[in-house]
Length: 301
Image (cartoon, rainbow, N blue to C red; front, side, top):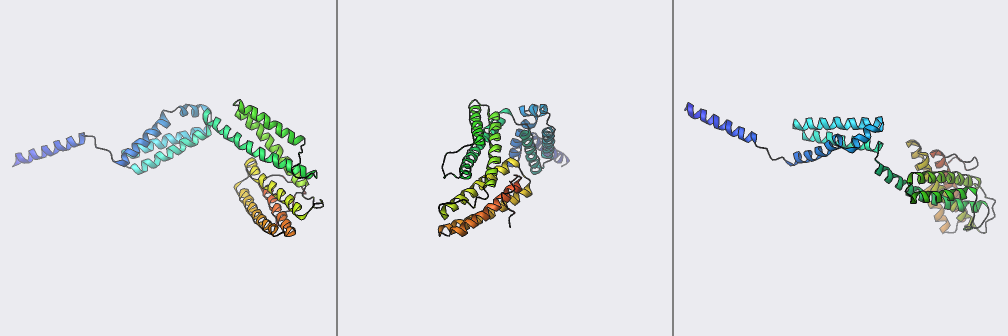
């Protein structure tokens, strides 16, 4: 009996040892963890980005990268203790930290893409501003809509646009962006001045009420186009952006009222509604940080 018991214990121990020696088939959670851990390990321990970030001199980027390494090490420790969910959370945090470091020190390819996207966006903005400036310049000179007109500011802006196109065609996108940014600033300042100086040409002799309505509608549209440019260029604080959005929304209400009234040929009230809406757009630009001419409008009611 004693011998049989000893043999049974030995067999059990041998079976346990054999089972322990085999590599268990990992479950889906373990496989998912191992795949992600392998990716993060390459990012933080064996990646060209590591050398770029360490050599960049950007302390914030280095800090994010150090955090990523620490989070990866924590993930490995958690996984070894069997806490796979917590380990995956740590790996996600490590990937986030690596992403932050990359944003602060982008590689040459990423910078080139950013510059190309910025160039395309600015080119559209400057084209819109130039058209608006030309239309308002014609109105300021008392010329009919669509009349060809120019001045030194518009010519300078167009020259910068041509310079930017030539630079972009030779893949010098960063310099092209600088040229367009200068054109953008010039046109913003000029358009702001034109709109302010024209604030109000209420004594202008319009051929008909619908002509005056069309003039005010174009003026309102010009201010609307200026708002997103001012936000992008001046980058106001979040509280100011909230105020800008509120004023722009109020203008939309006035604009809808004006269009409804004009549709029923009530041009007097329609013009009043447009002027009220434009006042809110002027306030929106002031909130964004764009200095308005003194005669460019009053505070919103």
